[in-house]
Image (cartoon, rainbow, N blue to C red; front, side):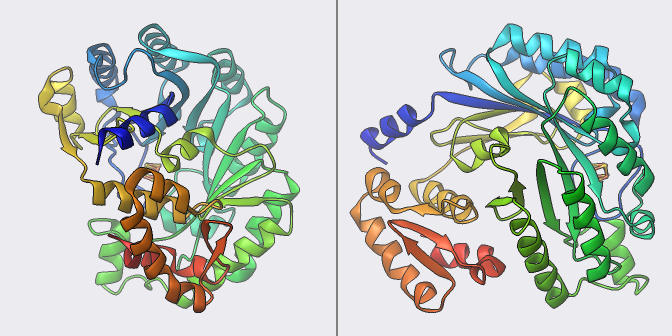
Length: 389
Ligand code: SF4
């Protein structure tokens, strides 16, 4: 890519995000392949290592970069004590230019939420929660091996609605072998009735090395039914859109003004830093790095260069990432970005590749923005892969 293109990208990105991975969970959910450990005894050592990593970062995010979002993900960040979150947040504020009013999100599980802790989180500056509800059906929660019940979730939603943290998201999963359409309708009606501002709604996937994968392999569990999953995707889409939610990314729905700034920054190609084991970082230009996915090693090595790997993305890789992420968003692929940043040859190649999807009713060209149709959304990842350069 030319320097002009790089400079154009840099000008577009004056704001950055920070992701902090907290790798502890109470127990193993049967579908999960995130990096986590149930050995909570290592928590204090981990926090010391995390602080070392934060203090050692002085290159990846330039001093001029302002931080507009901080996201505590995991794992289960709500397992940290407020005093531990305070230590981490204070260090971030000291080391980076965190904007006043920055979005600060904490992923929390329903069984960790009560009115006292909500008040403490709010005092620390946490102004957004992402709550791992997944479903309000108790049999399904047991099947998932979640640590909470539907009653925990219903109570915690009431408590959040009565708290000073008025921006929050709920995670839902559809397409599990147990979830009937009636169950899904019940889950959605609870969301709608409680006016939950933001929903992240994911199709269950079967990942190697998970208890779910092993159970299917040993014929102890039904597998995922792809047709049922597609129908349930459309059921979610239609129900939420008919009730005032905007699907601004294929798995994310928001009430007006309640989009997640942090998630949006990933889709807008902005730089972000990632701290903690398995966390990824991107400089907003062409360098990506990721930390080791092993909490013990991370603790031993934090602060040294050994804990991460780094790669320089080629023009084609950058373009493919742009195509894949932007196609999943409501705004779609912006043809002007392709032509301004990458040149007319890439633009023409893309225009040719999209023709068959436009005539097949899966994509539309909306004034220079290539967007998925309702049917196209069922094939988003396949279409993106087909458009890769
Ligand atoms: S709580 Fe979240 S990160 Fe932990 S095992 Fe369950 S799904 Fe995975």
